[in-house]
Amino acid sequence: MTSPLIELKNIHKKFGTNHVMQGVDLSINEGEITTIIGKSGTGKSVLLKHIIGLMHQDSGKITFSGKDTGTMTHKERRAFKQRFSYMFQENALFDSMTIYDNIALPLSEKAVFPRDIIRAKVKTRMEQLDIGETASKYPAQLSGGMKKRVALARALVTEPDIVLFDEPTTGLDPLRKNGVHKMIHSYQKMFGFTAVVVSHEIPDIFTISQKVAMLDKGRIIFQGTPEEIMNCEVENIYSFIHGKGDVEFE
Amino acid sequence: MITESIRKVGSGTIDMIEGTGRFFVFLFSGIFNIFTFPFQLWKIIEHTWFMGARSMGVILLTGTFTGMVLGLQGYYTLTKFGSEGMLGSAVALTLIRELGPVLTAIMITARAGSAIAAEIGVMRISEQIDALETMDINPVRFVFSPRLVAALISFPLLTALFDAIGIFGGFITGSWLLGINAGIYIYRVADSVVMADITGGFVKSFAFAITVTTICCYRGFFTHLQTSGGFGAKGVSSSTTRAVVNSCVLILILDYIITYLLL
Image (cartoon, rainbow over all chains, first blue to last red; front, side, top):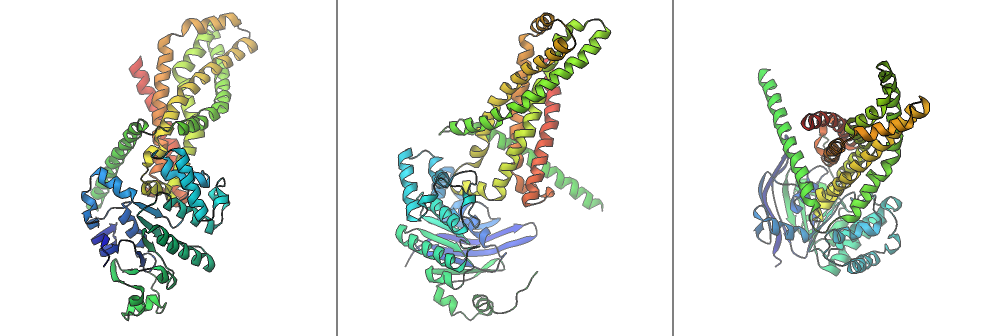
């Protein structure tokens, strides 16, 4: 049995009067792809941002390898952050930098590696993701699919242990969506990282996931394998997975 | 009704205290990170080029005309007392002590400060600053520290340029157009300006450099928290406007305080 690498216990988060997370419990296993699904606006991205520390919970506990992230020292927190990468929904590429500089940024800003090693690492990632020709271009000069690959290259260049993907296929056509899913799957196999993916691509995303969690009304209402969720007969899960029922606009 | 008013006053006060604390933490963090390794030399050069070298045109233009108008106004005022020969002193001291540092800072705010606030504001709303945090890169160090050093280099140099070109502008009006003896004008400039005037001008320009850069970077950096101006593009526009207005007002307030302390 795989051990949980990250555990969220009874996480609560409010934005003013909006109680986005109302006791979220979730465990993420090492070396697996865990997909978080749920209606738009249920706080899936907020959940990811809590995992990486971009947002802080009002109450509850997040543990990483059993260690409470809230009690980590500055040094431990830095070491913890260095094991993560985050791929943003809108890529968050630096539009005034070239593609090469964007990908090299996490390495060049820390001066841990000499320049030739950084160049080699960036070149390798760019070749693996088939974006070698774009090095001197700027993000605005690339298509949506290419930008996703650049964002993925930047996320992978530090050889992270955990990669968080926030709706990586937003705005892509069906062919490119499949391409991104395959890309996540094959690179996860290649590099062995733990992945957490927020996605609306049901059921396509299930083909690459080992675990699925569904967020609804501020709670995780389901955690299990893709097969289990596909066969789940709980009404709101079933209707969401199979795209049935009415949508309530609040 | 009364409870609501008290609540509003209380909430406004808390916001103000929080904002002040955040501002000073931002400033001190930016200063501290100037000295952390690896030094951002290339970025400092890049920002100095943008903030300093590329502001030279506007400084030359405004400096020349400020000096020329000072020459014109000064000449007609001094003529009333029969002391038009003092024009060189009047122009030089007004520029070096007051107008040079103040107008240079306002021109840099208008040209570069607004651009800085807008650029950082866009970085904030497009999650680029969040991306830095996820990459374990200190965003304050990345966006603020090199700009602060660039401002500390650019402001005094541009102030010196403004002063020099302004004095020349006064010379154009006074000597070439209104017929004051060139030798007298230059002699009065050299005779009246002492080192304390120049030092005072530079003290002001350093203070303005820190103020303008901190306000502009801070406004852009915390665009997402200034929701009263709107979200997204409107939020960036509101942050930019606030950055420019706050900088200009603080330049004038600081100018008075520093002048008071130096005299």
